[in-house]
Image (tube, rainbow, N blue to C red; front, side):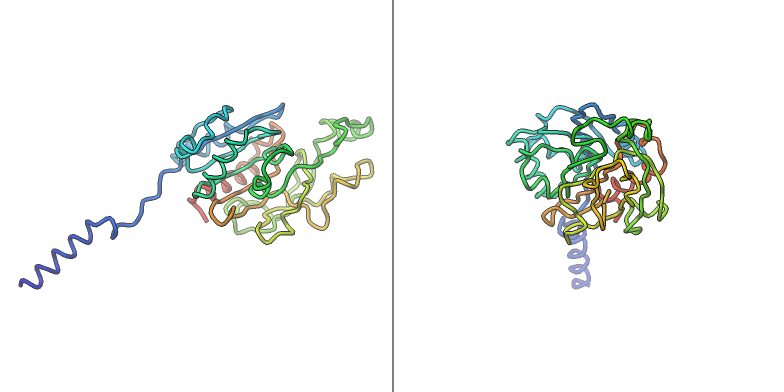
Length: 268
């Protein structure tokens, strides 16, 4: 009887011990950061997804939150159209520390349009830096382009092909889909690195006879991908998201919703 009592006591103590308890993941708390330079943002979409999943969310354009202490309040960072040199050195350092300590990151469209003074590791995080889109680098569309593409010359349709249909951000999407957006070409190609998994590519039908061939990234033109930054931080990016209409498209909503679910860890 004493032996049974001792076992019972040990079992009770083990059950009460923190070592025996499964760790409880923190409730997702998202920080939406945007430094929009004339490009519509998707704060409403991300906030809607967060609300449906009972996640907390804060949106700001104030980079002063980028301190080690400030970022420690959040489990995931969402960068929407963070163009140019949007952080100072100390803020980039705080972001890096946040990521290598296991924070996660999601970027939309112009999150890849960062300045040349940005630390090299940030390019690794994003997976590619914006180089061109139609009507660049002069930033002026020709009369022929404006006539053919009356939505603005730089806004064109293309066919998206899903390359990985198992990821939460692509599992509900059709294998091939024609949609309209501003399509980026990148200075580096994540499809050429084993560190990234490309989710979707463009067929490059938007690069026509009146569009410079240097926009091409053949044989693969990635437009969405994911990675584990330095083996510690989940990172997901989509090049879609320039136009206002994009944020009400079911295709894009499913795409970003799955990306968010993956970076916060609710779906793998």
